[in-house]
Image (cartoon, rainbow, N blue to C red; front, top):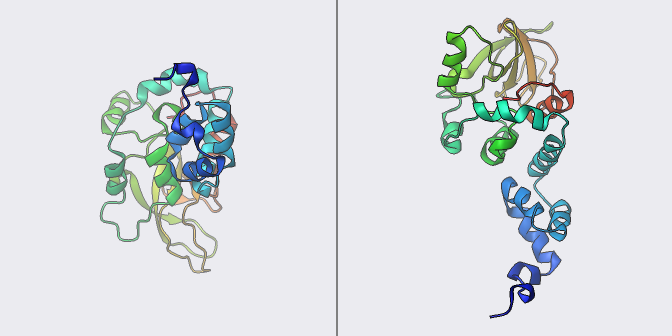
Length: 230
């Protein structure tokens, strides 16, 4: 057997072209771990032809861990995180609502995002009950099918019903919702995948606050709020 310092791993002997192809297909957490192997792998993960959705999530992860408030928020954030069956969680969302469609980037986040770097994370019934019993606000709301709502959109032209997932409670009167419905309004617009604010939980305000789920997460990181992210 060769001494450890003379041992070359199988991966080290592979050509860069094959490694680039390998990184194209691995999930987000594997990409993150691969970046820590060596400087060569760190470079190759950034050069690989990743799925656009996974590339955006990797870029978001790098901005999260480099944020000035990441470490400051971790202790309280980690105390509220819960592990769960991610696939079952996705299957539960929307229940029997026929028009419910979960945006792909939200699914990617739930399936692949590393738990300890959470920016927003499902909050389940026991945590919500703890806050409600003490009359405390808990900002993170998205959980199971109980948190999927059907709302009117407040529009000058028309008002129509839309299925939206409650994401965040800003305060007792303001909420953020992710539209999970491809229904068109009268002018033919599709609001699917966009994030809207809502006052008093009755109507979605006209005009989205974020064009997508990932854009909404990016905004939260850029805001740099010194509070828990979940």
